[in-house]
Image: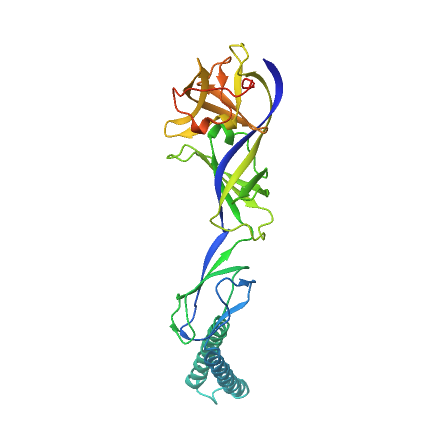
Length: 338
């Protein structure tokens, strides 16, 4: 039995997700005159994607500008008329009836209100013209196209789906005992598909509560190098997170120490419907052992909490073909699990 610093890791399966999936919608009603994108196109923020009758909205804007100019002219006329009458009253009291002055004050107030209404209408027309050019809200990839040229759309009509993949998110879950060793901003490594190329992600969130159905703690991390073509939302990822180095008293299988924590190679462990199992050789036959596993080490070994006894001879390779009670012939002097 030895005392040594052991580098522990947790290895789990996770998935890649887009940072956000957005629906690009119409804010105005009209006929789609031009679609400026295709599915799969990379777009940048504020890039024009769709044009919805921009000329009609431009004419409406010009009309509102003219209406505002007319309202301002009417206000100026009302102000001038009121000022003339007020000046006459000051020079010659009683020359202008009070009712007439009051009427002109009402005209001025009405003209002011009409100018305010015209300014609001002009602002709405300007907004409609800008909304006639539907733009990408963020940088991303067009996932779906939902409209065709010539189609009539209403406010709220979904025109396209945009995937924001920068940064990509890596989501995975770990046992509660492993979650306590992880920290925000910690980097984790992962691979995708059949490649062995390793990518990195930085932990941004560690859930405070374990999932009630899986008893696992959800983790979210932002992927570095999100632009890599090998990384796609929805892909599975094999995640390795370092839990830290600890001084542990370890016993290898084959040592007689009764209190050590045995560690075995991962290659000796098989998943089954019963849980994790391994085989030991006893009297020339394979005996199945159900295992309760602990933490994993960075050199490919796993702690065994229950199921194996130090001193037993462990099958490290070839266990895939074994069944409980099968005869075993050792090809050479294989070492005991260590």
